[in-house]
Length: 253
Ligand SMILES: NC(=O)c1ccc[n+]([C@@H]2O[C@H](COP(=O)([O-])OP(=O)(O)OC[C@H]3O[C@@H](n4cnc5c(N)ncnc54)[C@H](O)[C@@H]3O)[C@@H](O)[C@H]2O)c1
Image (tube, rainbow, N blue to C red; front, side):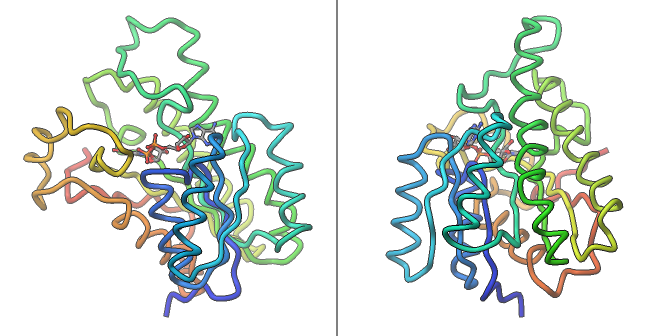
């Protein structure tokens, strides 16, 4: 069960952290994985790791916020390698410039755009690039990596990020309905707090926040990868339009 043999998956922002974990787990389940990142060297390192573990992967660098780049990049990959059956919209956070929590009142309006570009329009750009092919082949799995900040109010400076993630969740839910008869499912994963070490970052105040997580630890890329493998599988074809909270049991209302 949950085999991805014969499938091709594109994971955006997969050069480190959660995306790298998703790419590695999907490859382990037999998928050929296109590893996207705006930083090509990061994607290359993940491809090497996947291949060293016996999996199949290709580097596919492009900036998900650049609509003019995403389409040609995906079509070129599909011509060279294989059609994309599974898309994981993982690139997000603060984008290439990193994440600095800022309350709405203190944020320059230029920041509004930046969070929406990667967390919302990036999802649309990459989804648009794979959608026609999925419709033509009548098979597709679209998974959007969102955040608890997209479904609940938080007071520590993530309103711009949360607005973009909330938009991505709503977009994914509508996409699911528009394509429910096309063999395509679309779901979001509202991720809780992940161990910053997974992204090569120093342990910060998340260590203290971890104590408030009911299961007693921060999340890992593997926690999210396992959910994505399931949602990407043939067996999950009756699950669409959903937002799954994967957060160690944190209440979300
Ligand atoms: N880390 C967490 O605690 C957490 C919590 C909730 C949700 N999330 C979500 O999970 C996803 C992954 O988070 P992470 O912490 O692993 O991120 P990260 O910042 O560690 O890694 C993101 C990767 O995406 C790449 N990237 C950034 N902008 C890009 C762009 N425009 N095009 C292509 N690639 C781009 C970066 O180069 C980087 O390698 C994000 O969508 C994030 O919002 C993370």
